[in-house]
Length: 179
Image 1 (cartoon, rainbow, N blue to C red):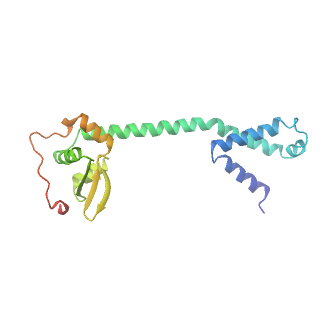
Image 2: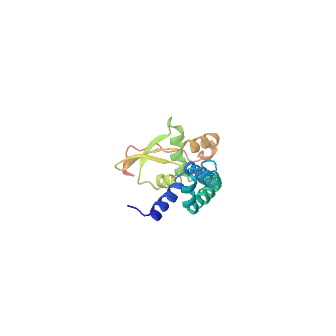
Image 3: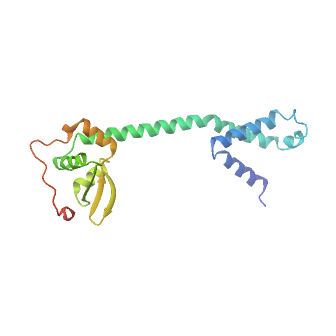
């Protein structure tokens, strides 16, 4: 049978499972500390555990009050990471090599944006690393890659980023898997 301290530590651990649990513990503890004069039958029990109830009240109250700040920080940080990733993708689209432009041209022209390429190609690995292409499936040396929606929309708005007027795109090789 667990001792009183072990039970108390488990109860404190339960407080931090969710803000709803913390708010409930806070309200119950506050009711036990400040409302015992309304229910005289509970008063002797609350007097015996009063220090523990105060600790639970303080811990759950602190967590309940600081949770919105923590949530706001995490949400802002996630949004900031999203915008940084988007900016990095746009910067990378402005510095494509000619061979990478040719690959992205195929993806823009494809209806669903999915094309198969050799997974051994340096250009493909570079585009996947920079999140301009996403690997869907790989069968042997051939992988199926999709252009993310945001990248596709950006390239459709700015087709000059992948245009190669001086070097036309070469036709696809039937032995693409051997590259």
